[in-house]
Image 1 (cartoon, helix red, strand yellow):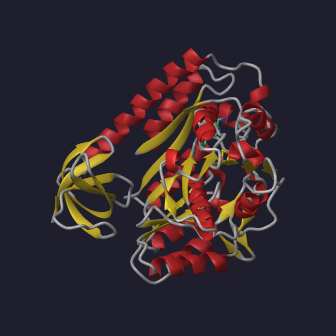
Image 2 (cartoon, rainbow, N blue to C red; image 1 turned 60 degrees about the vertical axis):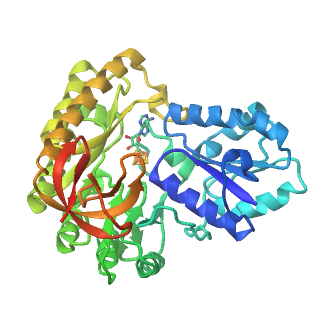
Image 3 (cartoon, rainbow, N blue to C red; image 1 turned 30 degrees about the horizontal axis):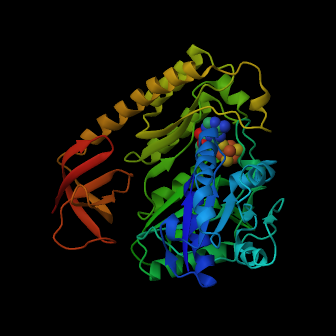
Length: 432
Ligand code: 5AD
Ligand code: SF4
């Protein structure tokens, strides 16, 4: 029996799909297959923006014919969109051929739901929140040499545009001991990069252990590996955290610090709980303590009532904070969030024009920073082989992708690459 998992959205979902794969392998599924040949297709959905949802709706709908041809095959839909208020009912109505619907709090229940499906016509199982901080699922990892490790689940911040607190529930931290145990096992198994995951890692707490303390302990695990974490909310980004970053070479000096907007008025409407000036103070703290570090961010354009001038403040923030790259989004109204009910929604054409200008500004930063790499030697952790380019690839500590030829398979190895050419976020070179 084979499975096929379709993942939408963020790294957190990518890792959750690894857990789904682990669960399926635990009940007799032996490996992956293309959708046409799979015995179960699982959609791990995202609902953070409307286009992610449309995407999933389109792909699920496209299975109607295949399901008619292969009646024994199972179709399961889980993830954020399945968890969204009213969406499970809509999915059942629109796509009666779906067999199983599960939510974000009961992923580990999937094997039991598959069992139940043998007796019931359709199985829908959703929980309001999770009681456990352990998923009870051993991930079948596919991202070697990187390994994702959850440290927190959920979010309490209620940024007014964001649906995550509604579909992922309240913030919960995993036990520090369990996290350390997982990291030790992964490093011993040969993983070379650990990425700690949470909607807001800075609010991690287990007894006396806060996030800087946890990071300090994880970075103290023996062995050569890189340590990354995401995402940090600027309001909780502290000097204690910078101190830990500075203390350990293992912790990459790349900080993802979502600003969302450069306008204090918009930030307040977003309920971000910091001003432009306070954000820039955090940036200054980071730059002062970690001068060779880089910052990346998330930015939203077209939030309700955003004026041309306020958008201009986001543009100027990109320059001032000197981001090395950024994820840029057009504001997408999400039913049930505060911002969706606000007056002054921005026409799409205006948002599209703004995001094009924003991307241009971000790209300028990226290009300028990449060019500085030419002639330098960087440490790359080789991740994969690119068939098209005929080259190996991997990231340097600050997140840029390096491409290089190599006569032997070096996936999972740290290599020294001399940069000969830069193209956007990509660097090209040769091993030294
Ligand atoms: N519209 C657009 N972007 C959003 N994000 C979250 N919610 C929305 C929304 N409704 C963005 C934020 C967040 C990232 C993960 O997704 O920038 O940091
Ligand atoms: Fe959404 Fe804000 Fe929580 Fe991030 S911090 S998940 S943007 S509510």
